[in-house]
Amino acid sequence: MSNENDKVLTVIAPEYFPRISTLARVLAADVVVWADTFSFSKQCAMNRTRIKTVTGPEWLTVPVLHQGKARFKDIEIDPEHHWRHNHCKTLLVNYMNSPYYSFSNLNWTR
Image (cartoon, rainbow, N blue to C red; front, side):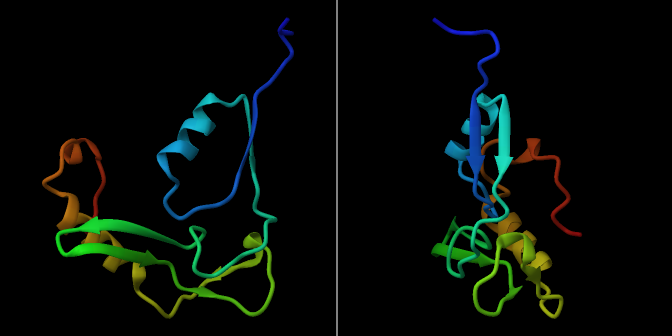
């Protein structure tokens, strides 16, 4: 028997581009815990994602300043790289003709 005080809890590890399944868990939960105290690991979804392009899969990676073991919340983005513009341009070029792109309401040219 269900109690009206029962809550659905989900714990989410930080991701640069969350997967649809992660977003579904967030929508289904009453309480979401952002697990920013998890250990940061290079080469994982915390600072990168793989997208489909016309020439095949491509990685979009946010450059970070990282030395040894650190928690995700203690990681800083490397300010020397101009990754935002490159990522936005890559997304625009590869997805502007996809269904529902016009509904994104995003200005990719910033």
